[in-house]
Length: 206
Image (cartoon, rainbow, N blue to C red; front, side, top):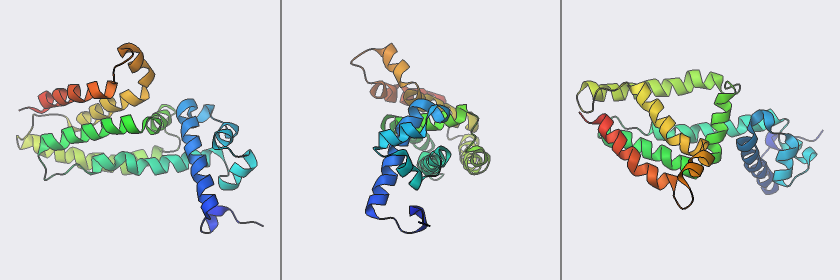
């Protein structure tokens, strides 16, 4: 019986095909959601036959989980980078800016994550209540400490983090709506940056 390519070091062609499948799946899942996506769509987008795709990944769910697992570390990196020793406003506004830039540069990934949440997080539920919650608890404690020390205004640290997620990822998840309302010739990210800077500066001011 032939081993699957993941049971031994991958060849250059195997790595290329795996990457092509994941890249195609990111397009399909971000547009169709997990339920709407099919293996046939992913195989066609990757330029492979369906049997060839199944040689690398045994199911649609396996591809989806691989994408989500790869995304999580990238998605949480800006929050992990929040430095307790830094200037509070610089750290919080810097975090917001990094999240906005991620929405500009990684809109498909943002929509993939949003679709998973809208479906009730069937593949990430355990991670949300463990790894994500632990990280948010830790950074909320840092923000609360800054508030209690009088270095920023008194804010609920959890809802501050939630508001940053909402006000940055909206531009990726609702890109069509945002661009339709703004009209042609306007860059929502260029406009959002200064607006959100002012918003959070005022929110955090003592």
